Image 1 (tube, rainbow, N blue to C red):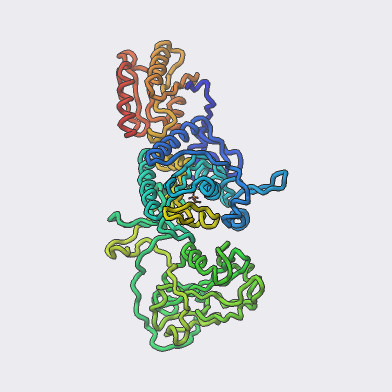
Image 2: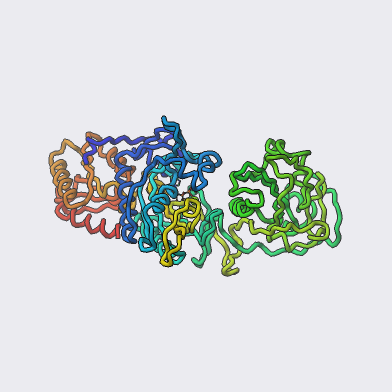
Length: 601
Ligand code: ATP
Ligand code: MG
């Protein structure tokens, strides 16, 4: 392609709308253009990158025996009602774009495809003989994200590879899951990314596991905790660790103490001269279940620990049956406004005890009249502890479970693991923290969807059995941008060779120099013919401008037919290192071939 004929517009200034380097660079270099919130046009250079990433993904998927297909993006609401997700996705989470057609039928734009694929399997897979089966597609997904940001990282329209596998048993599912873990590692390695596979939260579905593939970068929205020995890595949402050791309590007898202005653990410990490990703090949450019932949740946890909301949400989902519900729609820390809806009187916030009375709640049809009291494991073993007194400005010290306060019946593990904690597999290892961009997620689903949608096959014994399923997603457009987030310098993007839009760019320093043009044209034709994807910067611009643009768009090799032509050579500059070499015109092709092959393999 000739730059003179391309839609090629680069910006000198960082666009105001962009916050992270990769987003700025993709806009500045003319790869993407914002059309609306979370909506981007993939311009020709970007589209080439996306096609390369898709091709790597496709090759790795095909190698496992998965088959590519293309599923509809318009999805009938009925399918989502069968799985029980219509209300959650359109109202609670609200992530699905929903609409009504002119016949008054409801539809959604596909944010994911479990429902569609399960319905296909239900109709078409009759017998165990047809299993296992794995179908995948590469396609645009739609999600009405609350906070679209960072360009392609969190768009409302983005490209995903999603695959779904069907099995007769867990063992077969695990095999495909392992194959996918390998395929995902291959995809990321081939795309030139630094990444880590981590244990991930598999939500309320449970199942035997899920892993996320994290591209390591400061701008990542996820926190990864890992150990140096390589034995452990997990998303903080899921991570476990050993809490710090407990310090013995200085309080020997139960007493109520005046503790003015100590609504935080920090202030309280300073005031009482005690360790936060001797405090039971009581944290209030508000859960709304899918049947509309609000439940006030009081979590008692050791003072030096924090509640992990993802773990708490999973525990509350397990308890849904107690409230005749199936799942939790919202989990929040109730602010003053939320409290007004159910608080019968003003709560002693900051001073609550594990036994704060239920009569603070004005129960109703929508609000359960009793606190759901949970105690985290870290608080169970405390003796002579400090906690609230249910009266503002006062705490109690020297308290004990089942003496002054009944131990809540439900013991849970909802503490957040954090950097510096000792690892469970080896207490000599401490957890380290890194930021990551989730580019892939693989998941053992089990029978959640097949059961809900009545998708069964006939087993060898002649029984109707629900499919055992797995699902596997890669954010193709997010992956492409994360490559930039990991690889750039002050001059612009440095594409990994395997996914660069072009391998090489020939920048003609002076287009009125006939010899320069002649050599450039010759190389341009020759390189492209031999499979080295090459751009020709034949614009009537100063050499400096052309070099700057080539650096900005990040093409791996820049070829300059300039002064060295006298010696029958051109200058070849490697983008990543700015290293320059003079190479005989006749040897450019074979040299570049070697370099590219070495970089890709
Ligand atoms: P996240 O936690 O980042 O919202 P998710 O858990 O909702 O992601 P999945 O449903 O597992 O994501 O989707 C599979 C992959 O699709 C993700 O690993 C990610 O790479 C990509 N992805 C998800 N949401 C977006 C988005 N809004 N924009 C771009 N890529 C996305
Ligand atoms: Mg996720």
